[in-house]
Image (cartoon, rainbow, N blue to C red; front, side, top):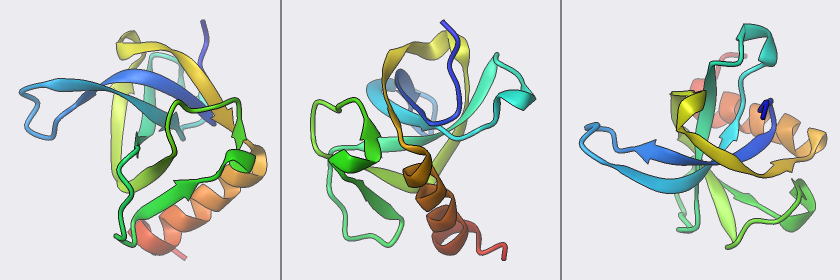
Length: 112
């Protein structure tokens, strides 16, 4: 199966020290123009945070459903090989994706 930008996929999420992984969803943010073997992703968690880098995912932002109420940890960005993706869970809407990109810029990168 081909995965694409805006897909929410179930992955073996690596801990930052690379000693273990945990099954969790992630949002693919990279464009398919860079290839299909590796993807740039953002961690999704069901643990609500008051941190400014947490962005809650509302049901209206989704094409499909997540098992639990969840949000993005905008500062948890990583590159992942497609072999670590188990399957697609859902996707976010194009409008929600634009909100994510804006939040990434404002809260993490501050590029503009």
